[in-house]
Length: 304
Image 1: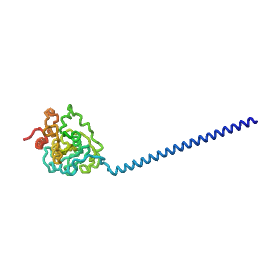
Image 2: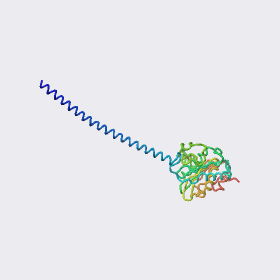
Image 3: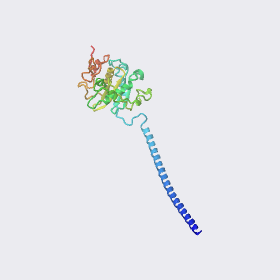
Image 4: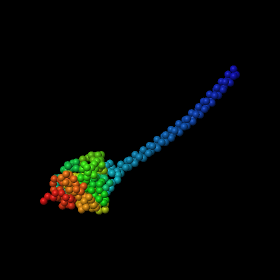
């Protein structure tokens, strides 16, 4: 009996130690759990603070840079009002001189040196007084001339025609800089051609390999490009040439033609081959005659 009592006492002591140890482990686990929860809550609060800070920065940025406005943009060679006035003065349909083509109204766009559209205008009384599709064509011509010209040498879009034909050294050029679709078809059409045109401040991309696009030079360096569209490509070149000169941005240092620099070159033979490699086809009107008078063209069938 005494032996059994001692056994029971030992068992009770063992259970007591087990309970004590278990409680001790439980307390340690509880302390560890609490520590982990506090650490987790701290991380969550830190993330919340970061999110609040980031949200505040977004709101501040939205206030500083309204929707559609570029955060950084190179200087525009000419503003909308100046471009509009000069364009109207150099298109026959809006009171200017003849340019040899259909003599229709035109779109004009200016690209800053960083590739962003910075001014766009039309010569007619309303946006649909000239081909609606020519708004984007004008911007892409400006982009091409700016993007493929350097401080020391200019290339007009007209200079690219021959080389971009199948078998030519520039074949496939049109595929190299896709149009910015998000910018091209965005915005309210009622603002097209105004100072708040939705293209302004955005890169448009695109490559055009026929007449109407010229690089802009202020006498110090290249400052952008101009594109004109809405008539024959040959007439577009003549209008762009006139507008560039009127803006005082025609200080072209050199080009593919030693005398007339980035002038349109009419030297394609009946088989479509260009003697210089920089040729452009003749159009149906008197564009080549007018280009020769302006110093904007080389060669061509001059009508008497």
